Image: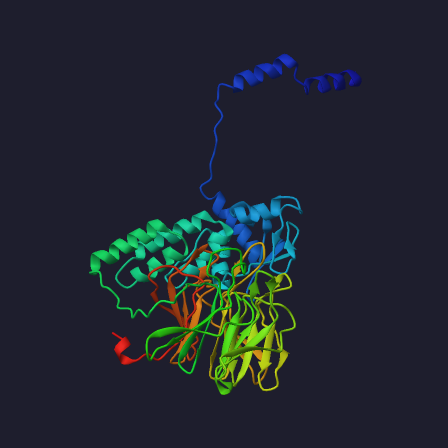
Length: 479
């Protein structure tokens, strides 16, 4: 009996096929309902943010300057096409090249983002984890640069919306500049229209000096005894150095005339010239021509109108920068041995010798150097080979202590710009911005007393490869 009851109980716990079909058919009378949570995505982000704040499960660290940001690569890949490409492809095809040849892949534990500010990256990371981002006129450029680099369209749209709403009499010039740098034609049109509605067009007076007989680019300039020297360069836009020239022209402000003087011994483009007043000499260093990069250095004797070779640099170099401090010439960076250099060299004209000094913190080329009192400033330029990266860090060298320090960075990248000193203020003019992929008009000035950069105007159009100098002109030439 007990066995039979067990059999019945066991049988009663299962349904036949016909019973199951009947049950499903009956339930189909109630349609499927989809539920959507309005708070789920907020809770998901909040959970990720809590994990980040507690440093739990973070598997990659983003580095900008001296700041580090532990994050989750899954979340980065979900919101940034830049990181999605890096993390989801196989190790060979997802490499992102760095300036020194090392590579980032999906398994990299840390990723250094060169050429962007730590402040901008902090704002973007906060947005990724919270969906919120505060934007102001003081932060918008850094945020734009990072969001463009990481391809986060939502933030780019927020920046556009903010800038359009911020256009007024005090900001329109700055916003036009931002639009030019970041390639935002709609914003530029709106800000320009606003400005033209407010102000009448005014012409800025320029003093035009007589033109040179033949125009050049990738040249060098120097001022010695209030004469302006234009040296070398190329007179055709061809392969770097292919059409380099050795010619030298001198401008005399007393008579407002140009004259040719003795040509250099070698054709040079992408080189540096320093005027060392104590020896009444010009020194032309390195460069490139149709043969290749140069290590030779030559000196111009004003009294003899003649060039002669002096001690060469150890390595062939081009696209470097230089400045004079206490009658010695300092050369930094440039392109040598297949990469951008961080080297700092010092030439002593008295003994005709080169010495190596402590290298820069950031390799760079197409940058500028200037001297203010006992400090040598290295500004702008770019790094990287396959992918050019703006170097916005400003480094300051102390020749007395052979030490480097870092001061306020540029507000945007400027390579192949012009630089000069006026009343102990540095002026950086024009150049090429690699993050914006265009020549820029901007004129920036640096106040060394307050360690601040300020935009003070624009060129009539974007220019790169220009050179700056200061020259005393007669009153009759100044309108």
